[in-house]
Image (cartoon, rainbow, N blue to C red; front, side, top):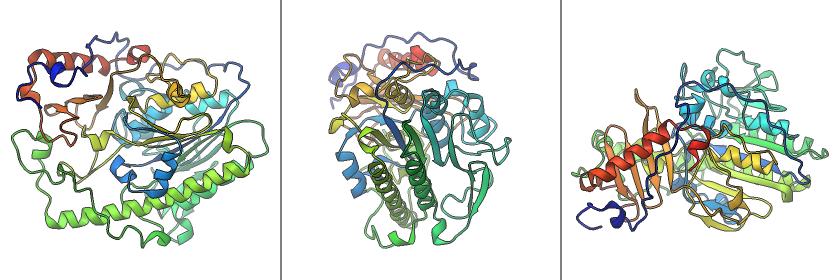
Length: 476
């Protein structure tokens, strides 16, 4: 990296786009009234779709899971896939609606402007209602969103779902043991016995749905959302001996030392003590063990699809709602920030015609709804903010694609935001950060002071335009 950052575009190898401002309509605030469910175009072949959505799974942890990596290597991996907001409830709302948080209105994990009460305003137009309207049989198993179903009754089932096994997080968020589930309107209590382990219960429910639909001609949509590896990351007894020697990632940013160029958010945290590091290492082992049950789940789902004759006509997506800092930048299991380990999440896709390999195309989880809609033969939905990833799944990348990914956050009192380009990142929160992600992938040197005022202003205007975009204006 040259000492001077006067010409940002030259320093970063010409990777900064020409920053043409997005035309924005409507801005943020509460979601607008949804249009009627669109009528699908005729389709001779409509595939089934399975989405496996983990909780707080960062990419470095994903890479430690051997069977999950085998799954990834049999399909297409998006190596630059980002959460639209790095927090559970807003991110899940973005997956369900295809919108950024400033449009769907779920800003936090908890009410009143977050979690289930905030999501209800958008429930009449989600991937579930679209796909059900297109003739799909739909099922949700596992975590829906935070504070479900506060204010709506324990037996409440959102629109669009034929089969429903949603964790009642408003009652008790036990996650792995000692939790309640709304099983198609019947509230069921699970205790602390081995057979109550949530991932195993969810696996049984998912497999039962696949098998029950095996003789029907309609395609299926399965939204399978295990709790792992979210804290407290409890694992099934059978996996207790695994990953004995694993540690939290010892990368250059782990327990980052003070330096003039470090992020203010990291500097504000105390250095991790030896006891903190020991706890992080133990927690990482627990997280990995909890993910072993997710690997079991994925294996069982694929086997069930094969038994029922659906596998060759099914797209299986694996991702997470957000990542997590596990000691990087002094963060102890921290999310809700713009560090790469928090905003970048895995996306692995297998299915008919999906190429084997990787793509570096910048993608955001708001793209999933548009992707599922196109796979189902639905017309383009004007109100969604994301773009369909189907061209990449068909090995026909579009001639024009986004040059930066937008991420927003409401962890503080105000909206903050970041842009992630192919070779750089820019963030505005408690400070402005600029990182050269090629020379400094661990984000140790903030280049803000070396960036020209003109380039900082261009970054700011670009991010500001995204922060109020809606629909087509979010899809450059």
